[in-house]
Image (cartoon, rainbow, N blue to C red; front, side, top):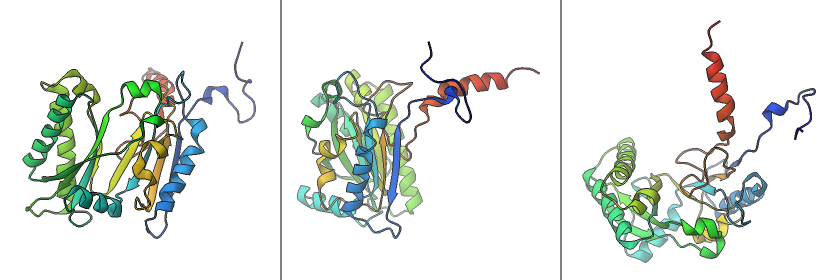
Length: 275
């Protein structure tokens, strides 16, 4: 018994697959607006059929949004929290998944701060990312991280933008390695993850369905949350289990290439055959 019709014309059942949904939208003149963010989320929601869910309809494989740094929004939030931000491009924001257990979470945060200082930068402040727990299914809720944003500045040392980016990359890599391989609780090693730490972009994602993302992250509903471009992704996990860190977009990209793994491996083995 076969699930697909036989090969005919341009159709070949070998290329049948389930795939994620990916979308991109931008304002051609680079003018940021909240409307563009809302349009990107609507595009994501219209790709809900391209993502998968578990045995519960409200437990998704993952969905996410990448946007340019919403500078206006973060300045407003920084003032509310009691610190000031330098000029756009001279500060970075890290979107961090942290363990639920308080002592493990604080140990992770102190590690981030220490590595930032070791790279001659300064932590300007932390912010709790407001979320609505009603918009996450039972299975993802069991492993839901605490989500916080860390604001990093260049400190007194002046260096070129490319060096700032390089140091931010080192902070992320070094912190993740310390926590994964150091003397940290199991929950910290499993749940700590930096979505991105960047001076030009921010990522909101999670083990959510495409329709949940807008309502789970309250930031995305704020009129001051603006961007001139956005990339969205609705995940259909095929060769890995769903997880909060594995939701897309990743730090620069989103893709739907997981389904090519088996065929790709077979083709690589055929390429090794002797003639």
